Length: 157
Image 1 (cartoon, rainbow, N blue to C red):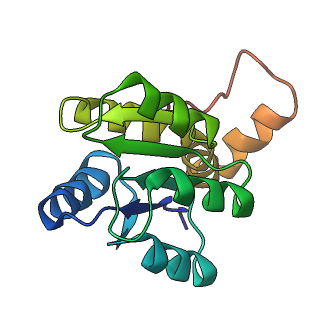
Image 2: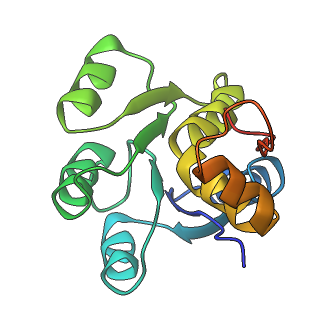
């Protein structure tokens, strides 16, 4: 059974949340959970696992920077992107210093979300492609025959 990557998106703007739900599900093929503030995000993280995090900078109860630091302590290797309307260089630098993997400006850089997700979640896609491959082709690939019987995983960035 294929593993579907899970994304947590944290934003207090309902319109942005609805747009991101569609974008992540339809364009990226991931499950998505929405949190409206930092407290709700941390409560969700306590009981569920996520492969990737997208955070708004300005939240009602905290900043995306502080939330990023908290998530980074729980998920040391997880991709975390701050997706914010703030486009000042200092905001980008603070996010990266807090442990963000990337900083994207909304809405102008929405088209960067899909490559970010694909790049950072390529391992689950590869695992899915291998698990769905015919057993013989997988076995042949594992036995060292480099020129024949390869299974190509499409859509991996």
